[in-house]
Amino acid sequence: MTGLPRGALAAYAVVALPLAAGALPLYIHVASIYADSFGAPLAAIGIALLLARAADALVDPWLGILIERLQRPRLVIVAGVTLLAIGLVLVFHPPWRGWAGIAWLLLSLLPAYLGYSCATIAHLALGATFGATSADRARVAVWREGFGLAGVLLAAAAPQWSAFDAAAVLARSSMVFAAVAPVGVALALLAVPVGDGQALGAPPSWGDALRRFARAPFAPLIAAFVVNGIANALPATLALLFVADVLGAPQLGGPFLLAYFVSGAIGLPAWLALARRLGSLRAWQLSMLLGAAAFVGATALGPGDLLPFLAVCIASGLMLGGDLALPAALLTDALRERGQEAAAASYFGVWTLAAKLTLAAAAGIGLPLVSVLGYVPGEPDTAIPLQLAYCLIPCALKVVAAGLLPLTVRPRPQGELS
Image (tube, rainbow, N blue to C red; front, side, top):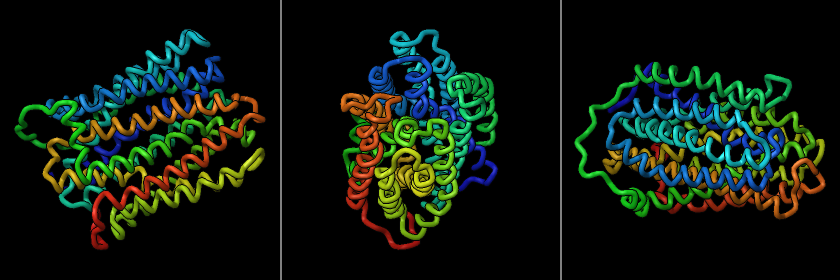
């Protein structure tokens, strides 16, 4: 399938808005909400998140294979959004507190993560069928990630709408999401064309799907994606705790997140322009190195350093667009160049597996680590391990990921996307 008309492209891309809006509370707010509002132990929350995310991640390759065989991406997307909505309502309406709430959290996260995975894999695979050129495919990715950022902004702003009672607002927001998102996504997808499909051979096994990434250029690309993903997920998991106990401004966690994501939305067109000029590979590498340089300054911050931290949020947010759009665009290019777009769902199943494992590692390692090293939420005097885990480790990982990228593909001439 070649390029999309603007209306159809917008209808495809807008699906990323509810997906992002539904996912952000699961990855940003759950730890702080369950610790502060529901009295659950922080280390236990981290283990519950690790288990739920790992279980979710391990089924992604099978989901990709199933979606590839069904050849009904729009139906899968709607079903996935519906399951995500059910999970959100359960997560933010726990009937128990403390240790009992940990069991509820673990069980209610499973449908939320499963629905998000189904919808995301099908959405990415559908997008891989659009665009005759690399530039067209980058355009599809930028539109998709632009609407995704809009969803992130809505979700990040929600807890600010009711006297900073984040738990109450997220509980109400989950109900609104359940009422609106599945219907809205179904209506949008009616305007998105779907190819006739292709006759496929025997479905690949789980191992076959993984082995597809054992060859160049997929193996180095996914290695860089994983390392950089951990670098992004670790501060995302710890952000609200950092604002509360290092900066001493818990009420400003939401505004700082908004500043970060607004900056990401503003910078997204610039990364498309840089990708056209330098190639997607070099542009993504540049975004990681500049992101590390911008974020490392947070290491020196302390109580009351609100304006310097705002500057860090804006500067690092401007680098966000490269991380959002360019990795998936690189994978899509590799698929199209090798005539593998019909199997895109299987590839993206493994891709989302990698993304989920980075989030699981950030929660399951980061939260217990800072706890073991002596950090106690609500006690700023113990926050040094939190500050190191929030700032220095992610910056070092970004530099490592940027160093992996030159191994992925050979640079292409200027003006051509990698």
